[in-house]
Picture 1 (spheres, rainbow, N blue to C red):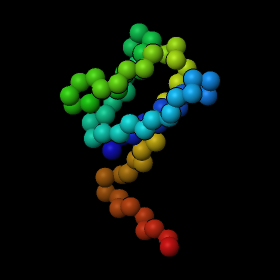
Picture 2 (cartoon, one colour):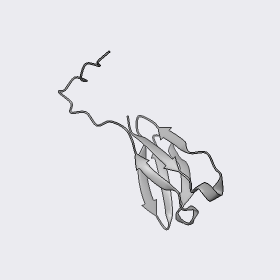
Picture 3 (cartoon, rainbow, N blue to C red):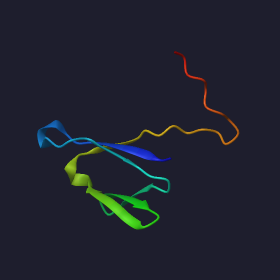
Picture 4 (cartoon, rainbow, N blue to C red):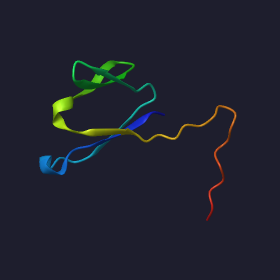
Length: 71
């Protein structure tokens, strides 16, 4: 499942946000970062805000199973 972490500059004093969804895509157009899902645009962030966007989901190969977790 695609997931993106949005980190705002400290001087803006905004909380960071995690956005995830089954069909979530990120597009950049006309100075905006636009998040789109199966229903259309769900979030748009202007480039002038200075936020950093990082993709944080884990990509898995279709035929691979997750590695066992150590306890």
